[in-house]
Length: 244
Length: 115
Image (cartoon, rainbow over all chains, first blue to last red; front, side):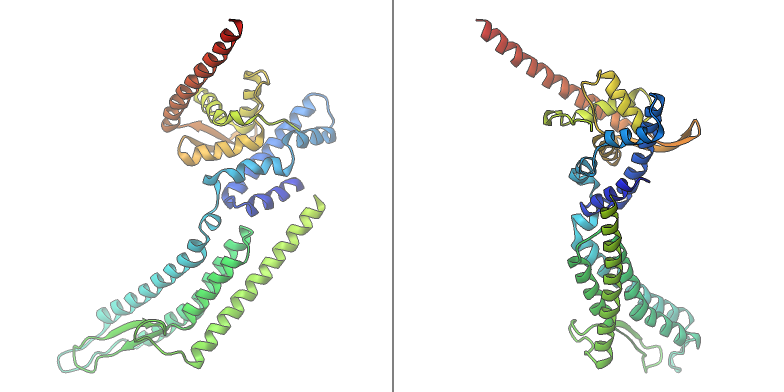
């Protein structure tokens, strides 16, 4: 792909055009350029002159970018509604995964648990391991995975840092302060309680040193990784602009 | 560099693209060439206009695209859909109305000047 089109890619992404349309547009323009060069060569120009003529016919970056940027239907959701992509979407995903984890615990206890009117509930021995693994995943790895997804979208779409960082902080706080609870019934055949809790919900869990540290660790890791990724992209973009 | 067309061309790229694609499937370069040839260079739609219009029409459901290999080269071909054909009839009718209206004003002016 010609270097000019790399500059065009950045211009389009910064202008809010969705990445899939940018990729397709650049592929089509590259093929179009090849056709224009072939046309020039058929007209008797040598390869170099045909290339110059073809690039001149296509026009400059701004000329190629303005209609793409002006068309609202080609814009990325991250530019149209950043609060949905970077705040609401990740939060809803996290809540859904938390609910799925709780439903999984309930189904396992209901299906594999044993108990009678005289004997309290017993669960299989492997349940403790599964519970620990699932909650560790939800509390430690999931925020990092969601943070990675936010950073990827933000860097790919050349977003300004405000919304991505807001999203990362909210995810870090949401997952860092979260606790899972199981209350086993002491009564034979009694109801067991499964739940997730946060300090900001009524009768929720309290902020402890451990949860506070988790929040800070999440924020530190996610924002640092995002900032490094973003600055690497900015350096690359600046390099391309200088070469163009 | 190719010169763009003036502002009153709004809606014309859609009309021309749909009309050309109603005859046969084409890829971007073919469309640009066909428009130039069929309008005797009176309308020169730049690539910066044609491709965004194609993408927008595809999102709208008026076109669909498919990668096809022809003569050893792979290209993205566009074809018109049923929705696209209906849209073509609608905007061609609207364009025809505008053309008649503009013509009558231009004709009227001429007539008034003659008097």
